[in-house]
Length: 438
Image (cartoon, rainbow, N blue to C red; front, top):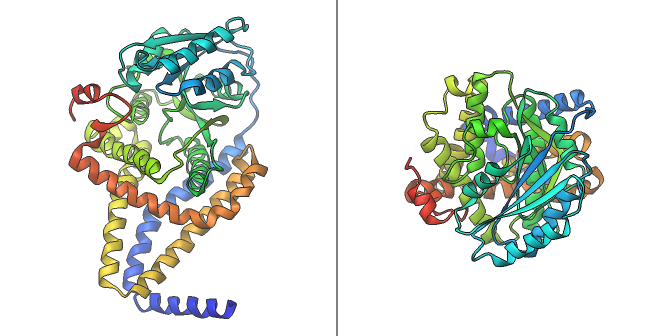
């Protein structure tokens, strides 16, 4: 068996050596665009680990949570409970903003039950804010922001739960007056449902928790998640809060970077061990629909809404180059090139050669994923023993990444042709259609 495998690999090597003009063009693209990102993340993690000294909290700023609710039902109680039960001595205000409360009676009633249940808890205030007319995610966030009393505002989704030390850990970021906002780490709660949820769990670990840790260390954090982000309230209001359309989290992050350009000492941080838990799509259709929205919104934000704002003068050279290469080129152009290049290879080259090249690429990305995973387990993960069980699924992760690239390519075309950001479930059509056109 081993001998047969070695013969097959030797055959594939021969195929590649006789078509070096193709793969010598392919690998420089990967090295020029993607390898630097891996190196940036890895070096950032090492730097973060070296400098990650425990910060002692001597002040406990008041915190306002804005929970966006639409259709969660009784599940909203879990989110409320985990916020009330935070081991944080400061004041916590929990604003449960129910969008479309008229047609959302189950969620509204569950929120009221949570408010009543926690009415007597010291230093905790649960307040339900019904938005009778549905206006979408952005209007829900801004409704909460308008009445928030805390110094720090944290936006969270209604289907997310949290470790009980999350606030305490997050507030360590804000001991520095230079930090104007911080992202929190999300983990997959329903990871054990099927192979799709396992792959997404690996993605959240490697691309999001580890990736954002490394990027934030070098000052080029790509995005503060709309499901879990913390902001200084006065500054959040100063930049205008959340804006209409979709991808409101990336839109806000870009505006914060533009603000930061005028005040170079300001920082966007990432709280690696402030942990939230969320459910991810467990069906192929659900996953594809989610990524159609996520990836299509990238093109809308980068090349339509902020096409004039993506510049060195507004972002600074570091964030400009990072956004250009790893926002526009990697996430908008590269997936299209992957599809075109794959189709070209299948037409122009023998199938065995294509198979050999795909195997080489698979092994390359598997090796890179393995390195990131080892570093993640050793330096980043707060649940290393639990996360080690994902080792056996790493061999499928490069295939999942390739599949996601195909979905991204389709999402980009879908946005160009159909302006799909105007069909998002994050807001009613009358909100998105009447927003400013870009």
